[in-house]
Image (cartoon, rainbow, N blue to C red; front, side, top):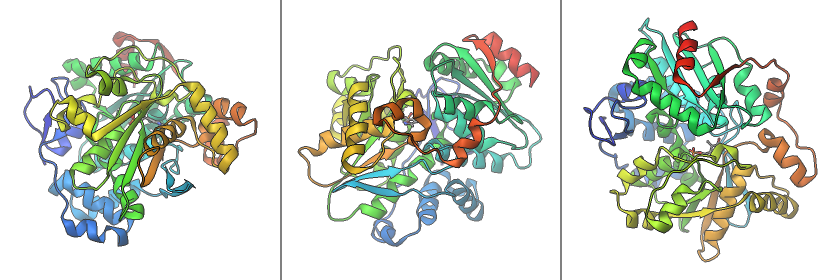
Length: 430
Ligand SMILES: *Cc1c(COP(=O)(O)O)cnc(C)c1O
């Protein structure tokens, strides 16, 4: 499969090249040149297939013969080494719980797949690669956990000081080994910009063999489409299926839209946002207007300039009307989010995390006048946001052991300003 850049100023590349480069040199984003249609028989049989077999068939459409079947099956199985339960919260309303991986957020799926693909491709290389990643909370920990102890790979994580939860911070600052955490004086957007600037500095990129693990990397998008197929396998059939995606950088939603283009019969996608409602605002006004992000209690979605917009834009032929046909967008305040966590917990006993709560709200809004089956993505375990969730429900939240382990370890982070020079001096010392 060839990948092109959305800015179309650089040549097409292989999957391998696309995932090592992360970001093309023209500052666009890689997209598959053709979107493979899965045959009708696949969708007829999907309800009887195992998760790993579904995922393999999907992955093969993006990777073709660049990774042999046996290896790709191993990569898929290693990535999805945990369950993806669909939990019925109310009649016809399901939570797709994507947080049963090692760091308790859906980003484990993308990070684990990327780590395994990079490791496969660098199996015979002696050149050390550096994964540079900006995080609004969950990416950093998933990447750190996914790459921990991998030979030939250093990981450098940039996170905005004071703007991620305590547990999230522990998850990315306590691992040591090949993982370096940098606490940046600034916002997530500043961190993301530093990563972009580092990649656009070709000398720097070459010298440190920089690779990105942000959701701009195709190897994170590909596995994120697996669970849309899985949802259809479990729930799809006679009734219309709606999926609400709590969104920040729009990687998760883009993966869903790609799945639909491959033939997956999802009736409607819903983009659910917090106060950083750049995409819902675009659907209303037709103008894409990035702005500085504001802080919310669903902090992993505090993104003011969602990178994956340009991928969606390509999927929709740069036509706002196509966007509007394929996507509904809603936005919710912190107050609405908190009220929803409290109300759903009281009514059903189901504990939403703040991101899932935004997804739930969008789904319910759409389903007010649409019958069918609705699914919202539960993107993180509520225990990752104790400071937010406990006061809302006025109860202690049980912390899974794998999170508890992080809490007890010592934090090590390097404080820097949002400055490329300071970042470079860290890279030099690795
Ligand atoms: C990253 C993240 C999101 C947003 O996902 P995008 O793919 O960036 O839109 C939502 N919820 C949680 C918990 C996250 O970590």
